[in-house]
Structures are given as C-alpha cells and as structure tokens.
Image (tube, rainbow, N blue to C red; front, side):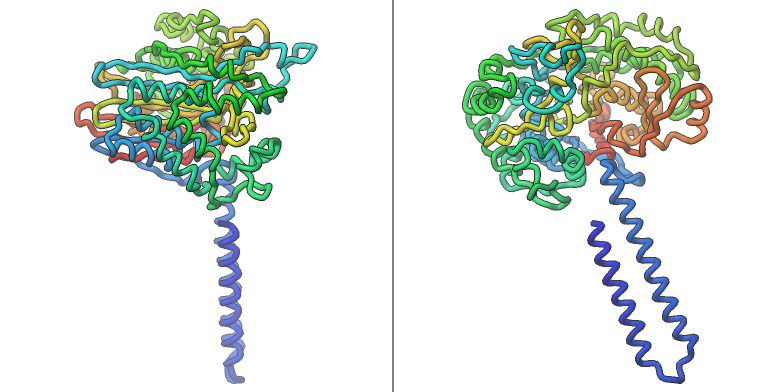
Length: 604
C-alpha cells in the first residue's frame, strides 16, 4: 500500500510540475511576476499536501505492521434471525455459513471453519495442534465438552528439557522437533462430527480443501506474523518452502498455495482420522521425527480425545459453562467472576482507578491458585469445586481492597509456559445448537516444523509444560499440558444466550470475564463488549492495559503504587474474541468479532 501511494505522489508531483511549466511557457512579457508567484505557491502547497497524505498512509500501514487494527476501527454487532458464525478470519466464517446454508448444524459448521483456519491462519492453529470444544445440543438441553489437547510422547521426560543444573532449556521446548507434542485436532474434530454433527468429513472439509488447493490472498495479519517469525520459518527447509516466497515472507495480496496440505486434507476426508494416527500420515510424521524428536506411530495410534464434564458457575443470575482441566481457563474465569460479584461493578464503571485496581488484585489471586493447583486431572487432583465456590471467593475478597496495592506474587512464573497463538470459533444454528471451539498450535507457527510432503505444521505444546520435575504441570508421558483456552457458553434460566471464546494465553482468563461483565453489568451489546478497553495483571505491581484507559486513571494507579505497561489500542496482546449472542425471547442472533484480529462474523 505504501508503495502505491508513493507512486501516486510522484505522478501528482510530475503532473503539477508539467502544468506550471506549460503555463510558464505561455506567459508573455505582459504577465506579471505576481501570477508566476501564485503558480509556484500552488505547486509547493500541492507537494506539501501530498507528502502529508503519504505520511498519514505510512502511519496507518505501520499500525498494521505492528499486528493490530487501526485505532479508529469501528464495528457494530452483526444480526441474523437464523444461524451465525464468528471466527478469526473471513474465509473460515464464510465456510461455516456455507455449511449452515446446506443444512448442516452448528457442529458441522464449526468443524468446517476449524479446518479452514488451519489453512488461512497457520500461525495460530491447524491439524498439527489441538484444542477444546463445548457443544450445546438443543434436543438434549445438555452441554458436552471435548478435550483434544495435545499429549506428551511416551518417551518424554522432564530431564530432556533441563540443563545439568536443572534450568529449563527454553529453546528445546519452544522450537524444533523436541517441542512437538502428539496432535489432537483431527481426532477431536472427527469425534465431534461423528457424535454430534449431521455431515461427513468429506462434506465439511470441502471448503478447506478448495482454499488450500486454489490458494488464498495473504492478509495483513498473516504477513505480519510471517515477518515477525521469519527466523523460525527459515530454520526448516520444508517450512521455508511453503511459507516463504523466494526466501522472504509473502507480501499482502500475494496468493499462498498449500498443495501438500490440500492432499493431506483429502486423505483425511476420504479415509477418516485413522490415516492420520495409524496410516500414511502417521508414518510421515514418525519419519520426520526420527533422530530429532520423540513422536512415533505408536504415540499417534494411542492418542484419543476425551469427553469431560464442563465446569459450571454463576454470575448475577447467569450460568457460566466452560472448559475444565486440563484447561485452567474455565475454573479461573468462574473464580474471578465470583470474587468480583461481591462488588457493584455497574456502579464502579468501566475504566476508573478503583475498578481497574479491584480487577488487578483479583486476577493476582487466581493466578496464584493456578500455579499451585492446575494440571492434567488424569495425573493430578485439581480442587475445582473448592476453587469455584462462593465461600472461597468471599475469603479472597476479604484479603483485598479496591484501590490498594497488594504485592503478593503468583506462585511461579506461569507466563513462561504458554504462548498466545490460538484461534476461536463461535457458532449458533437455527435449531438452537451452539458451539464454542478454541484450537491452537501454541506459539506463532508452532514448533516451526512442517512434515515434508504433508503440509502439516506441528505444534510446540511441550513448551506449555512447566520444566520442574514434581509440579502439577510437570512433563509425564501421555500427560496433557496446562492450557488457558476457555471456550465458554452462558445460559439464563436454562437457555443458552452466548457462545464466546478467544486466544491470548493467560489473558484469556482475565479478558473473558471483562467481556462478560461488559455484557451483564454494563449492558453493552456483544460488539461493544468485545471492543471495550482491557486490562490484565498476574503478579506484583504490574498492570497491562490498552492506551484508551484515561490518563487520569493511569495517574491514580501510579500514585497507588502500580507499575503500568500501556499497550497500543486494540493490541493483539489482549487476544481476539469471537462471540454470538442470542435473544432468548425473539431468537435473534447478534455477533461480535474482535478488531484486534481479522475477525469476521456473518449470519444468514
């Protein structure tokens, strides 16, 4: 874009010069010097005005390059009387709506959108990763949750990721073959479709196969992620061969073709998940891992998604239903809301020193509990019911005072072990079924490893384990690493009225409650609630916030002893929520997509 406007500027300058030159030649001696000065003044003003315009364009472009939407981005809630799909990318949203229009239900649409996201948002999710899904079925009036989180390989051990002195080998956990955990996405999506959908894999994977085969236009976010992760993409030949063009990141507007991934998708569509976990794809993964990583065909063949009970709580009369362990998200979202429920959030308002301090102090307490208790429930006992009890929230509430700093630190640096590259899908169909689905490859572009010939970009979920030997989130064979992913449904009087979720690592746990309070306490619509400024805190004095928080509020917080980290407006640091809200009286659907990401919501 910047180059286009520079060219336009040069053309305008050349045209202006030619006009002056031609007029200058036609003037005879009777023309006054005054007229000549006027012409030159116009030329100078034209040049200055054009330069200012180009500078403005450069500022806007630079904002995109920083991976965020322009500050003046405005969105309004989408509406529909039938079905609705909200995802992080318009290709995925359109694919989901296409499935709904063909008679598919919310699960069919969500699975279709999930496969498309693996094509158009490879930095955030894909079949080399894993995720969680919540499904509300109108017929049974029940919520089921599917855990298809990645798992540690059978040969994995904490010592493999530690130095001789016991320190974490961060690079080994973050990049390359040793960082890869057993992927769960294909198994999880296939289970959801088989048990709760109405279509087969071939039908719902059609849109993703077509986009991968025919190519898609690289958008600003993908371009930004490629630039920021250029080193990682360059490390592995198979990865560079796909995600770099002549050795450099693709530019905005370039077409990205994923032929190998299209072929892999076809194999899965025609043969089911078995081809991924025990067939030709499994063999290709094992071959790539040999001598460099841990995963074998035996690891893949032993993987299975798990049906788990959701975690449930309440906030001011609404029932909150979310993902339980190994996600920490649902438990701590409810815990945070329980603490804040004892305060008049509506009276306090959205962004003042008292409300921000109150949220920060509550956040620090839940992260302390997260580090102390949370892990895979198949390996450690997690006291979920105690953590989400109203009585425990009251105890914590008595320890804190709005506007007063408490420097109690979280028990462990939980921020070290989780990345924020994830993607979320929210779907509501015309039969009343709802889906909230969050999936990931963990860090930007996961481990960086693409399995040659398959197009599969593998996760780096071993980095989500804590490197110590005996903690609740320590590495064990077959164990699932702790997550913050929190696909969430909200019900009132037993009837669902919201499906929502977001990426953002530990910010998921703090931002989703803010969105829910915006809806319930501040009575915003879904898009307003998503757009509103956000804050985040985990330990000590630090509060992270968007720059839209007023300066006088910041000054008050600094005087109270807080150290502020001010992010730009609509910064990707605070995630990208996607949600669909239902008016239980009229049946109307209202959708919101986050301007912090290239989110899109469409109804029909």
